[in-house]
Amino acid sequence: ASLRRYALTFPVDVLAADITAASLRSHNPLSGQDTLKINLYSLSHRADKRPFLDGCSCFACARHTRAYTHHLLNTHEMLGQALLDIHNTHHYLQFFKAIRAAIREGRFGEYKRRMIEYLHAGRYSSMGEMMKE
Image 1 (cartoon, rainbow, N blue to C red):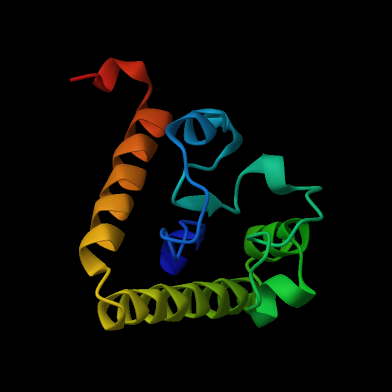
Image 2 (image 1 turned 90 degrees about the horizontal axis):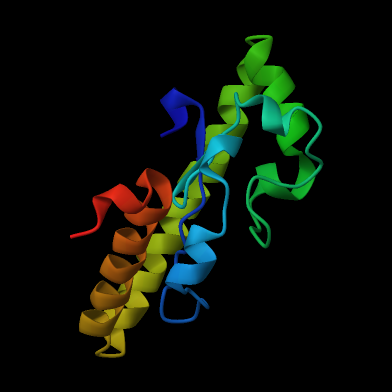
């Protein structure tokens, strides 16, 4: 994801997250983002003062904005790619930590089911209603 200039945004703990198909459909796919990641090259982030992911505790999200990273990526500054790598690595580590916790608690089946529901709902959100089965 980092090499394509995307910051990951999928929920790491679907058992704790408030995820509904309606909330997934409410985002604007034309803004350069989908339910799993955001494209920081998108012009919609040019003046966006938010972190990559609200509530993320990684170094990149705590100290830098989408707008600043958008600028870094568009000017080919190495720091832009480094910030994406920091965020995405942190995100994956939190994701696998949540999976390990679900396994330890005997709730991995529920975790897997909720993640599949989330991904399925995101597909409709990103690709429109023409994907109806």
